[in-house]
Length: 483
Ligand code: ARG
Image (tube, rainbow, N blue to C red; front, side):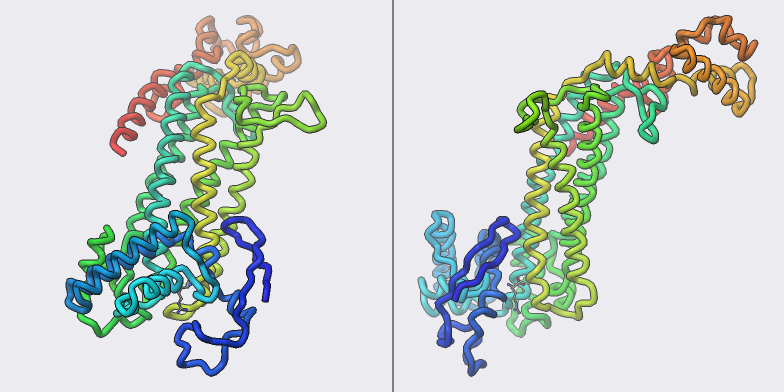
């Protein structure tokens, strides 16, 4: 019988053919069943097509489990050695693409165990002593996520360093800062980039915090109630590099909070990347024309020869929705599930795998692209000038001369109106014209009306002044070197 299934992790529609019809020779716990599994149900319930991705972790977990069983005198040294040798051979077979995955064996765990027994006989059947697939799968996912988190963190670090390098080149580059996407006040491009950097600092933090709760070991919880064998869970935890064994066997097999947390941290990272993307897309448009996007990260149009489309940021912006979708899937998957393990949980893997893949790919694309973004300094400068970005500075000037802020706000509004009508920036109005609005204004006003004067004045911690941005970059470099 053949069935088409969509594999979310590989984005492929795959044709699965099962030869199994009525003979129930290989069915799990077959003694319990009088009837063979329905051929479609067998395919429908199998997860091997996607969970084979955790084969490395499954073998790693089994080697540690067998070692612990041996050290606790639950299996013999000979059996343990045969199991480890067999598992190492299976690992080679998988890496060489020789391993034959079978739908009849349902999932990655059963496939590996069946092959092990096939290779080493009775000792292979002893591996599952004091263990269930419920604690096994929870362990595999945690091991898998732990290593994905390391890769994500690495790409995040690359991107943070790329942003720092670019910010360093632009501590003096003036651009308009926006609120409501309208020119608000002048800022430096370096300061804007450092805002991106700060978002990623929080992402790194959250990722490391999430890792703490991922790195706890469920093995030993068995199906749900623990096991009657005299196991030592500390041994297994230590062998696998987990910080400790989990505290409650029911919770160990049913908990997927760590997966939801991971998808949530991932959604925040992608939300940040979507915001960076939106700005890059806007800035590279002819209307803004603030930056030059590297050709290698853009594509042309099949019909309009003049086009250079910012494909990478657009795609990353699009992919952010998909990761948030996975977060929702996982939350809904767990909602209302009774303790302890339920087959529902098999549905956690595809969203998790895709979340990790999407994060690694998007961060990598960004880390590769950011160093090649070119700033069109003059355009940025002109745009800040056109938008009356120093209006607040004029108001602050009047306040320093004794005017109440609300009155100053009013006076500057009138000056801006004159600027709009005569198509001039505030710094281009004459002293006499400005003095018409307030007698408090004198020659020194021009120091504050220039874009340079405006940014230089904001030199407190967190401000946009070139010297402050330089200091922020230096602090950030220290932080990065401590990672
Ligand atoms: N493939 C299953 C999963 O991904 C493994 C655990 C199966 N356990 C069970 N009791 N059916 O969750």
